[in-house]
Image 1 (spheres, rainbow, N blue to C red):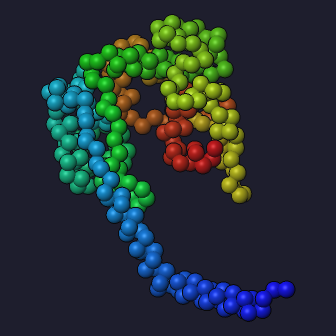
Image 2: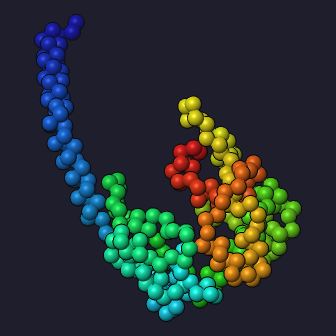
Image 3: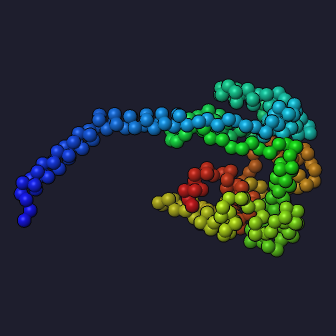
Length: 277
C-alpha cells in the first residue's frame, strides 16, 4: 500500500514548488529575469569578432571610378560617372546624415533604394558589421569578364520560357560559349540548385491570406525588349536613358521567364516570397 506519510510529504513539496513558480512569474520578477537574459545574450554577441573589410581595390585603382558602383548617379555622355557625383555618394556613406543622402547628385528620377539601411541596428542576432562577404572580382579580372558574358546572355535569353530552353537557338548559343547545358544554364552553385524546375510551382500559385488572395504570377519589367535592343545595337543614349527612368509594369504572365522572375525580386520583399512559399 502507498505510504501515507510519503504521499502528504510529496504533496507539500509540490505545493511549495508551485508557489515558488508563481512568485517567479510575478510581472516585476519576470521582467527582471527577461532583462537579465537579454543583457547576457547581448553581451555574448558583443564579444563576437568583427571581420576585416576587404575590397577589390577598384575604387583606389581607377581615378574615374569606372569599376565602382554608380547606379542612379550623374554620368558624362559616354556613361562614366561624374567624379563629383561619386564623391557625393561617398560623403553620404561616410557621414550617414540624411541631408547628405538627399544631396547625392543623381542623373535622373530614379533614386537609390534604402541607401541608409546600413546605419540601422537590428535587435536579433549579431550586428551586420560582424558578417563579411568576399570582395567582388576586380574590374580587370577574368572572373568579372566571365560574369559579364553570362549576364549579357541572360539579358538576351530573359524572354525565353524556361520550358523552351532545350530547343531554343539562343540558349544553344549561350551554352556553347558558357560551356553549360540547357539543364544547368544560369543556375547557381548552391547545393540542390540543379534539382527540379527553375521556378518552384508553389511560387506561381495563388496564395490565400484569409479572405485575401495574392496572385502568384509575376509581372514583367518591360513590355518589350528595349533594353536588349539598346545594348545589342550599341545605342549608348538609349542605354543611359533606360538607366534613369522608372520602368512601367506590364500585365502578369503565366509563362515564367528570367524577366518575370527578376520583376518578382524587385517588386516583392524577400520575406514575402519565402512566406508565400
